[in-house]
Length: 130
Image (cartoon, rainbow, N blue to C red; front, side):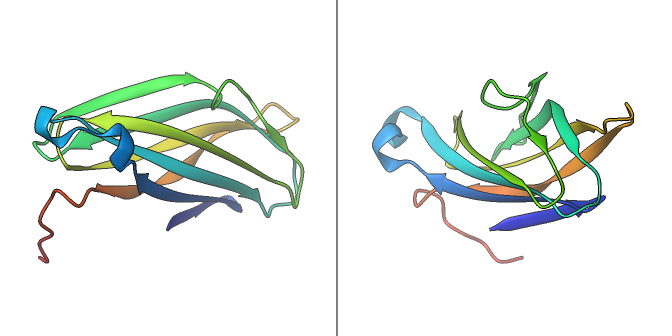
């Protein structure tokens, strides 16, 4: 599990390698990632937009921007949380993802919430300790 807190908004991510959707012989590797967003602050916030940077083991990056997450723009009152699952394919057996959510308060203030960098590891990649 990977976690980051920005302005009392905690984002926790758990990546899961999907063996049944991957085809290593064809350089196709797929992960799901489960995200939980928790509002521990005193004000209501709405998730407006998302930004992801996905980097494979060869250092190739792609950026993904869009409205909301999984077709929703959830509003979180103090103490509330929101969970969703999404996924990504890669052409290498490992990679890394990171990003941010754009949030808005009822007063119209917008701010970025960090999505922690998380590792995409498959059993088809030897792990190295640096």
